[in-house]
Structure formats: C-alpha cells, structure tokens
Image (cartoon, rainbow, N blue to C red; front, side, top):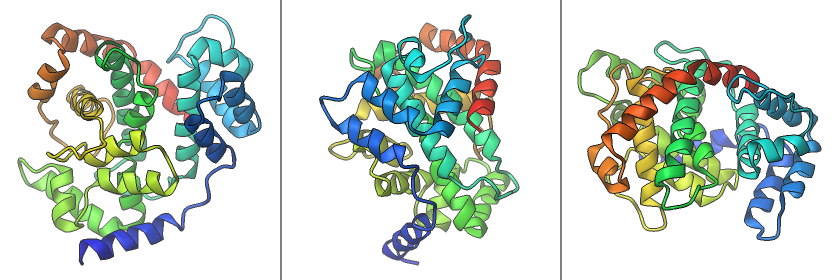
Length: 289
C-alpha cells in the first residue's frame, strides 16, 4: 500500500472518532489568542462538568499532594498554574475521545498512559531548567500525547499493529517505530500528529510528536522540544514506568543531553524524582481515566 493511500485510510478512520467535546475547540482558540486570560480558560472549562470533575480529581490526587482540597477550577488555576490547567483540559479532552476497548497482546492502554504521564512529568521538570530559558506551555501535553498514534493503530489497524508488536518482541534490536514503518508505512508519531492536526491542535504540539522517532527535524519544528521528548521517553522506558510496546528500552540519547546542557547528575536526580512520584503518576492516571 502506498504511503498516500495509507494516509488517506488513516484520515478516514480518524474521522470515525467522535467529535471533540465542545469545550476543546474553544480552549484551542483561546490558546491562539494573545488576549486570553486565566479566567477565560477557567470559564470555558467550567462549562463542561465532566472535564471540570476530572481536572479537580487530578488536582486533588497524590500527584500534587495539596494539603487543601481544590474545589473549583478558579481555585485550581493559581495552585496548578494557568498553563497546567490548560494542558490538563487539552489532554483530558483528547483522552475522552480516544477508543479504550481494544484489547491486544503486547499492548496495554493503561500501561501506555502510565508511560506517557512519566514522559510528561520529565518534560515538564526538565523543561523548567533546559527549555531555552522558558517554560514551554506545551511540554506536558507533548509528553502525555506523544504515543497516541499507537492507540489509533491498535484500534483501526490492529492486525498490522499486532504484527509490528510481535516483530519487536521476537527480534532483537528492533524498535516498534521501525517495525511500524516496515509493516504499515508510517510510525505512531506520524499517526498521532495526523490526529492532532485533524483536531486543529497547534503545530508546536503536533510537530515534535510527529518526528520524535525520525533523524531529520524539519523546518518549523523546535529541535529542543524534540530532544526533550526523546530524553524523557528513553528515561521513562529505562525505569519501566508503564508499558509502551518496546520490551527493551532505548539508550538515553547522549547528543541531545549535551545539546541541552543536561549533566549526568541532572539525569540521576530525575531518576530519583520519578521513583518518588511513581505512586502519584498512577493516581493521576486513575483520576483522568
């Protein structure tokens, strides 16, 4: 099957998914607006009771460990931060729309989300120190949604995706994205980015996800964001936080470590930090699922 035909088929399957919750396009438009405020986001989220409930469950989970109960979105914004509340709304909106009923050997959606939450946590924490002197408002979303293409492939191309998973489990030195390219013609990063683009997510989120397993970084994609994602992904796999389809973790990419100025002790500190928040990550997953 030609790549163009594969893309057309993926788009047709993406269009079978339910439409996004009404609040999500509103939040995406607020992101694009230079005049939007924290109260605008809070008002938009509060119009969706289900999303409000999940965000408050996250805010009151062990992941954050606040001593006081967070009872409203307006209270959550100053405690979690404007960008974090917005990121949670985007992530929860996507997760609510993705299918969750497809069982597959070698692949667990719960394991995938646990892994993705660990990646999101690393990106957010490392981003504060190494994100070009600023906290990228999209770091958490990029980390949490970087593997959503696997869910699309598992749901709509399950036979081919299963072949890729079996190849990785039966053949040494093969990574899942390599098997996907050989068997399907695209990898899960590209598929996930196609989904996000269809749902009109900013390119600052979709582009790093699209290329996080590719060697070339196209113009218009922030190379540092891709580097952070690759480091976070490798570190989370190394620590076996969740399951994402690769039985053997990749090495932490040394070139990107050096490029971002991350030192060996920074990586060691992050390993300790991740072990410390592991229970919180599982509590986070329970809150959003």
